[in-house]
Image 1 (cartoon, one colour):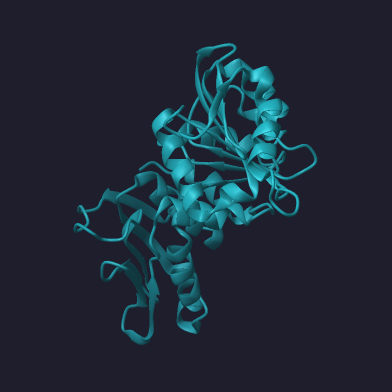
Image 2: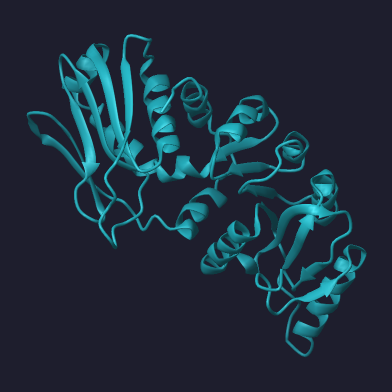
Length: 310
């Protein structure tokens, strides 16, 4: 784990807290005022590569200064060495059955705790949700986690990072439903087609529309792979969305490298142009960190998405 915390110290698990305290004293010796108080814990679980990317994202946000960051990769070790800095702890190759015990011991007691799940064994996820005020799913293959999530939403506020990726796509289309012509046509929508770089995000988007508009099986949903975006283009999970109805049809698509355009066919005044944002991991997790409440819209979208095949 030295690659994650290059300035850290390697210590046995039992010595983590003592070493952290020692580092804090050494770092702030001679400085005016007390060390900055920590206000929350962010636990990141995943393989080493995905942990490194997550740690970099938090560093870009400057989140390391106000929270305790716990990075855990799974393996076969029952008592692995840990690497610690003033505000971060990395544990490499921890046996999954000890994951919850490690988090319970290291999180900041009585302060908010967020779990950023980037992959791993799901057997302990139900118990881990009991230790977290919020869980953000972010596995490369979300299907297994999504199946569990449907049973865990009553325990903690839960979301998926793909939901954050879809924020601008949802907002652009949702605003079109303020138009009288679109509201009148709602019951006539009969097909949804999505071109996507990420089929899982496309399912979640389709699930959002289906749950929001109360569709039944008569509305066809088709998801296809999008063309590879041009080099340097902003990362976005979708490329084009087409919603067709007898009274009105809506198209939302990437217009340029950094913009999304949504419009109702034949109604020039309806066009909305929305910046896609930078789409980076740091930007997305930054949006999610500030959310504490339960997201019912996500939960409904997920329930519908689980019934949609890409």
